[in-house]
Length: 229
Image (cartoon, rainbow, N blue to C red; front, top):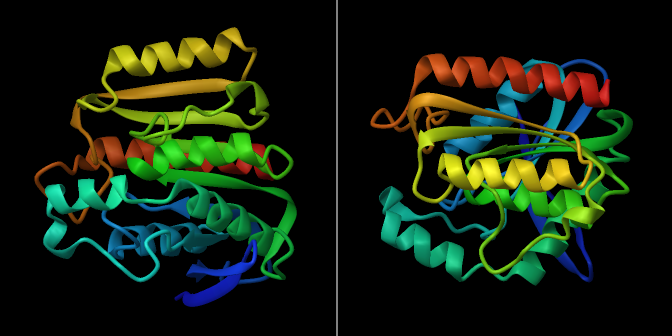
C-alpha cells in the first residue's frame, strides 16, 4: 500500500515508510517505531491509518536496521545506542516532509508512537509545537536520556498505557498526567486493566490484547480526527 521515501534531515538524509490516503489527501500522522526498529507492525499501523483516510509516515530511526528475532537484550542495546540529536533531526525532517505533501490536507500533523516511540512522540511534540497538534503515546512517557520541556507542548495528548508495565507503571503514568495538567496542558490518559506493555501489537500473541487494542484504536482515530479535522 505504501512506499519507502527519503527526505532532508538537517543536512543529511532521512527515510521511512509512507502510506498515503487511498483517495485525495488525508490528515497527516507521523508514526514512531518501537525499540525493534521499523518492523512489520509499524508498517501495518501506517497502512491501517491509510485505510482510515490518513496519510502516515514512519521515519526509520535505525536507518535500515531492525532487531533480529525480537530479542529484548539486542533491542535495549539499539535503543541505548540511538543518537537523540540525529533522531531529533530525522523526526523534525519527517514533519517537514509530511506537512506540505500533496497527499496531506489541513494544518499541522499528529504523532503516534509506541514504547520507545511513545516517549519520542511526546518529545517531538515539544520540539515542534509549531506543527504537532496531537500526540498519542502508547506505553512511553519520555525518551531515555532526555527530559522534554513540557512547557513547550501545545498539542493535545491522549495516552494509552498497560496496567502491567515496568517502564511506565500506573504510578509513573499518573505522575506524568498530573505534571501536564499542572502546566495547563490538554491530556487524557487511558490505562487498560489486565494488559501488559505492547498490548496493541498483534504480531506478539504473548502480550496482545484484542479488546484493549480495539478500544485504543477507536479512541485514537476519534482523537486524531477531532484534533486535525
